[in-house]
Length: 364
Image (cartoon, rainbow, N blue to C red):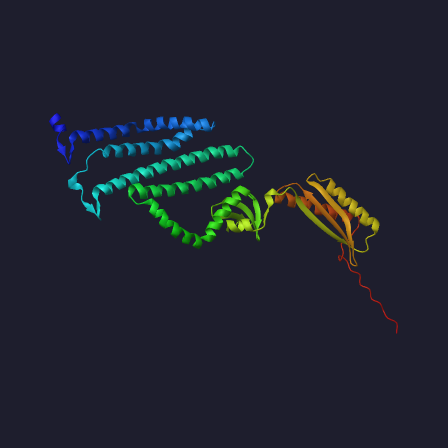
């Protein structure tokens, strides 16, 4: 038996092959338990930072990529202990087969490690979302989504540099130096995109609006559905979907309707010149009573504003609470009907509603 195990196949003994196969099979069998055990250790550390962590969610997100990473790590470490057969070590485009396989292994290991870190970022964002949902400020949620995507992009760039360094043996330092010159030229060409990126940071920290707010920018009014790295997406009141660059959202005058404290209603009445002063006084007092009796209206102003050659002008301004547009329109309609009914009771006509035509016969 020892003679068989000591036989050399492709520069390695049979015993070495068996040890490698047994170790890999063992890791494949127990990877689930090892991953859960390691995940439990990490969970204890995470729980010390965030008390309200859900272990089931953490395990479902982290255990599977962690198990895959451990299998790849152990398998590659075990395989590297074997000697690569010289008979198979040919050249592929001026690169030996051994170097090529080594690069593929490093690539797989780095990709699995970056994938594990991406899952960790997803888990952290879930925890932060749970905490943010407990507050009334929804701006924290959009901040979490923004930085989640931002850190994923940064992690992907780091992973790409690691692959270039460890998998393909490139000098990242010289590469970054060369890319810095190219990056300066690209930055000038992409100046507008960089301005939008900086504007997105201003939006998140200054918080002029949040997702779900109704805003008016330029001539468009709608609800903010998403704030991205380059642009803000708005669902207009016409149910269309527009994309506004973040730079314009920062530089433009934005009317945030969701932040209003009151809604204003205006009413302008021009009564006929035949209306007597007592009727005008009764009309002004009556309008004040109508507005005072409505619980939706918080404050108001009613006055005889102007006396012109064609009409008496009465101005009424009233303010409701921050109710919805539908509710405000209902209040406005009811107020108008009540004032029309009051004018009918006082026998007051609007200016221009009736015209008297007189024919005067001139004497010969």
